[in-house]
Image (cartoon, rainbow, N blue to C red; front, side, top):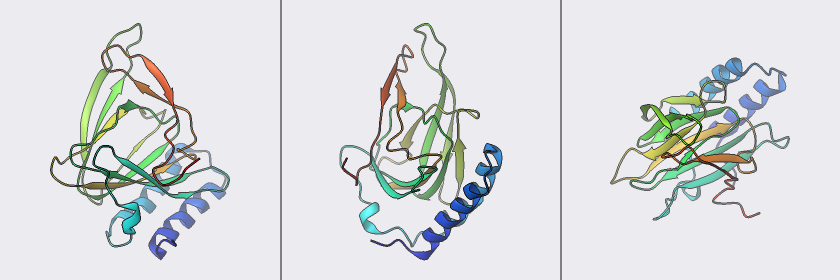
Length: 188
C-alpha cells in the first residue's frame, strides 16, 4: 500500500538531510525533528493496517526502510498498558507522538551487577517529538501512557532498526542481553 503524500514528503526530506553527507548528529536530529514534527502535526495519514494493536504486545510496523539502511521509519502501536523492556538503540532515534500518550523512562547502567539508575520520566503527547542517541542517552523503557486506550507514535532511526543488534537491560542488576527487534509486519 502506498503511503500518503505527507509521509512521502517526510521520507524525501530525511533522504535529503542524509544525502547532504552530514554526519553531524545534532544537525540530523534538528532537521529530522522538524520534518517529524510536521508529519505528526496531523493525524489523518496513517493507514489502518499500520495502526492495529495486538492484545498482548506492542507492534512495530515498518513504514519505510532506506535502501542503503541509513534510516528507517516505523509506527509503534501501543495497546492499553503495554511497555517495552529497558533497551537501547545504538543509533540516533526521533520519536513523534501521533495519538494518545507515550511515557519514556530513561536509565543509566551502573555496572558491576548494580541496578539501573533511573534518570527521569517524560510524557509525549500528540504533536510532540523527542530524540535519543548514544551521545544524548540511549537507554529507556517506553510505555503507553494510557491503561484504557491505544497510543501510536512514529519513530525514525539512524539505520534499519529491525536489523540492528541492540540490547535489553535487567533493571535489578543491569545484566545485558542482545536482541534484534524485527518488525510486526515483515517476516524474515
